[in-house]
Length: 200
Image (cartoon, rainbow, N blue to C red; front, side, top):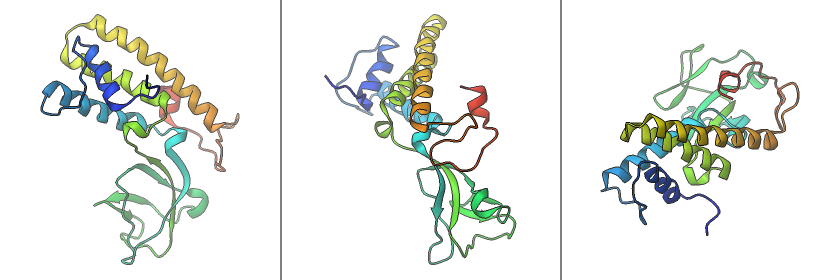
């Protein structure tokens, strides 16, 4: 028996929550399966966008290319320019898939830009606790869209809450945050992260 959850395992769990039969392949010609896969991908992005220890990095380097532009990687969900490295020299946002400096009104950069980043990964690249949480959350969303049973959705929500708690524990164990909120490898104190305060 496989210990780690695959995409097929997750889809079958989502189908079971609405009384669907298990499948052996992910046939996107089947509308129910296609919807489940789409919701699983959507949920994976949403969960990872919160920024957990396993998909965040501090002071990640972004060197400019030969055109002095910095292209945004496809798997970059969000970023914040490192204050420790650059102070208030830049005010960078993403435009047209590139870094844009609003202070200088330009896409051109003459040096490597360092940023605190949140990366996105595919479902099967996530740690197991997050696979279970994403699957439970996707199951709730899938059930809420396909069935009109409030009780069923509430039952799934209870499983989702348990799985999220395990993710928070996993995140704390791997990040080793101090009482000041600093995690392993982090030298700059970040005073307020809304999702950590409200959602967790």
